[in-house]
Length: 314
Length: 140
Figure (cartoon, rainbow over the protein chains, first blue to last red):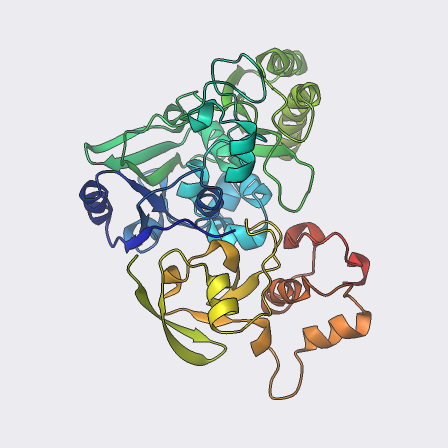
């Protein structure tokens, strides 16, 4: 499939990139690894006048441990993160989610910033332009109906980042810089909960750093997919255990991940919490597997992840 | 659309090209340089038939822009053989008959090169991320 016409600019610094954003009046897309953006462009789901390459911003390509935080630049590739010994030792849930992301060739290309800010996906959305014109535009494309659930008023596409779940369970924070200045927030606050516009970021904002508190943790990541070598999660659970508390994040269903904080890890408590995932998971038939199966698997993976993390502790 | 000058080292030969910003590396290799070893298949970065090696790492060239590659060192399957001698991987693919129609084989070899030779790790099918269903995978 051929890419649409656009201009290409390379930014050397974050200020540079924001300058370019202003220069082209916002009709731009930021490019990092391109593993999410290029298919979107090919499908004409995004048609920017200019693509701004952020890979040249060297400040965002480092991993540093300082003052009790591990700071990861948004340009670090998933493959490079996997080689990092601190991540292996301190954040097993993050290591496992990196390992579970796509395949290794794509991990070498994809960056952590791009992985977090990937667009939500739907079986009726990620299609070629011709296909979508024939079918009729859905809510996420600016149409008036949902093509999956007739009569739905909001978009129910799925957010499919593996690493966001792990980072939420690790209580990570992110730093974003935009035309309006710089701000930091907990990672779960970047989600708007709306499938049609999944991120609560201001126009032109760039995710620059991810910070994880440096505390040793136990964790596990469980993911349901059809092809073990590559697929996006159809439902996934990240569990991070610190002493007697657990922070568990369920994703792959709906436009934003869902967080569960558990105090005490008795079997009853875990089973109860895993049952509530069934009710919470608003799965609809917008993936290759049936919504009922995915809902049930949310609870199964929940228990599996917690048990795996607990076993590791012994 | 304005064009951009890009200098690439492809199979150890320096080449300077004028490309459009929206040209993928795969299009450049196949249509301008006649290096048709990398194949256009899914076009979405899923299947891996377009894999080439860029700066020592395998890359899916159908979702990478040529303009991003300025100054990069690119190796394609055409550059694997030394003089007239095939690369050991190519030899073993032939010996084992790990080819059915052969369309995806060049991408397979370029991916395999990294995982089997450069990192000296045992091959794991679920790692490789190459999706070729017709192929006699057990022979790989």
